[in-house]
Length: 354
Image (cartoon, rainbow, N blue to C red):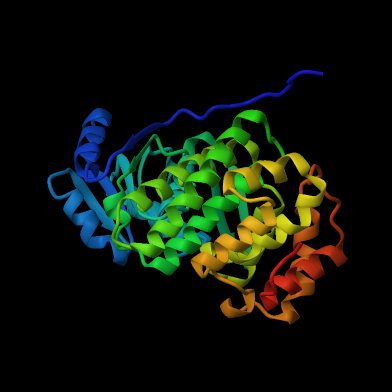
């Protein structure tokens, strides 16, 4: 029958170079002609942000960053941007810093330069997320896509190993979801497979040598590919589950994704043989589930949702919130009983099979 698909490629400039973030940032700010920059960075990245922007026209350093971007947090940041007549946003850090910049851009249309220090991938998508009254809403808007992304492995060198692993597995979740997302196609499938390969190589290297740069570079490369694939394919079953868990119970973003991923893969893989084979090949193993389980064991990855405050009493409400948003094209039909079983296993931390 031949190939038949539609694909959108998002317009974005990417700079990739270890030790070159300051140079790239100065060049980009000059290119935009910005004169009043808002630098968004959490406390962990505050010194790095100050160093990178010391000679730049910074109007405001902003550090009031909250995971899952509560609506009230977004409003405070938007007000600060307006009060300081900001003309460009620079965000340094993980998904929460990028998410806050996106929330500001959604309201102001200010351009964003993103400098990731984790492997979240949000910097390469046009997806925004806001949490209000215990519910996380997401949407797609071209105005929130960072105009430029600067990847510098030196800046992620001090990211703790545990968080590096969780963040990298979050990126791998983007890859795997992209193989059966609502708009999955051969282009984002190819990107996702290469992303899995890079992450599977980079994360063990980080565990073995946390201060090394080669593993960090591979993880950043894989995270970028994962995000580009995800932005094209859309949010699949895994991300629908994690958005509910994060937004409703305020579970830590990366750890939740890292924990839930193997259970979704084990659920979908039997009904998605082409995707399953591609994941296994990228992992260099006979089966996708076996390969991911082996990698997770090697990385000492997050194991159970109960470790982050999710309880068995929360499962019925989670099922009721997740079931209506599961994509209709998921490889396998999903029932309330299926979700209950999956979330129970993820709560307990049992090893998914086969």
